Length: 370
Image (cartoon, rainbow, N blue to C red; front, top):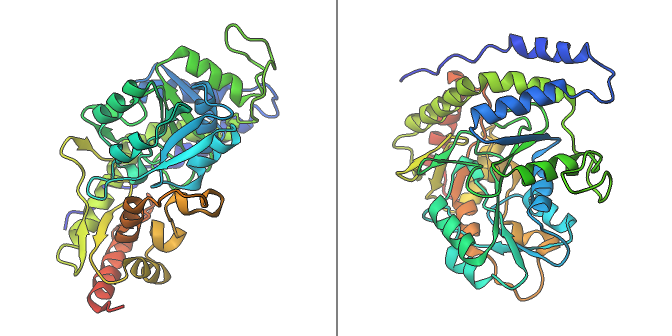
């Protein structure tokens, strides 16, 4: 079996952090953040990049920049984590959960259309596991209803669909650099946008509106303590230089594991769309075994981590703070999560780790009768 490309050298990461430390303490320092933002515009071919403290902060700032506020409604898939919905609530708006198509993982646009009202302001597609929906369909849906598109592309750095990179479909693309992402920096995130007004609003919002956008005064409105710390920015900027190699390694890891599972009982790899260049964030397998969620949880106990088995991911519309009323549950999202094994990888997972995962998966799938 073909081996993995080597783990990208990490020696420069420490040097970058030490360089940032040499400038501290500096209450106004932003040298490494500025460098990181500049390099992001080059790597992701977007006009503007704004570094922030987390992926959740990125969504919060971008939704605010898109005009979302009290009493608005925002469409977002139930096939997501609670951190996608949290900023909507914090802005005083209402998250309206939309179902997903179990065959494509994309939004169920018929369901979305039925949930649009006069208060609907924006739609937040979520590229879970790095998989991306069709940008043409999303843009057409949003344009017809005059909705802003703010992408949750936290796991999708390096993915594109029909030539459109994740994070560039609409008004803003929001990314996380928390550990576990392909582009990581312990914590952090960033917003990409082609719109200078969006970028200026995000910059003001992340820093308590101390540096206002054109036409506004300092602290004219509330913002967040959402700046990316300089030490984190130094690490993020150094890792951005390694991003092509990190992306190549993740794609190779996923391909390696899926090849090793060829013929495993009840486990079928989920393939990307024909026009999708997937970053292979997580090896994805459809579980065709009895009680599939229990199988994922059983694997987690044996040391094979996954979204549902380890982190107990469920449709966001079933979280206690969003249940109640007469809303029908998003059954497509539930079906996807119950039947999908999304294995969690790290860049440090080598052939030995992946071979162990494959051996456990093959053995336990063959024996599973629950």
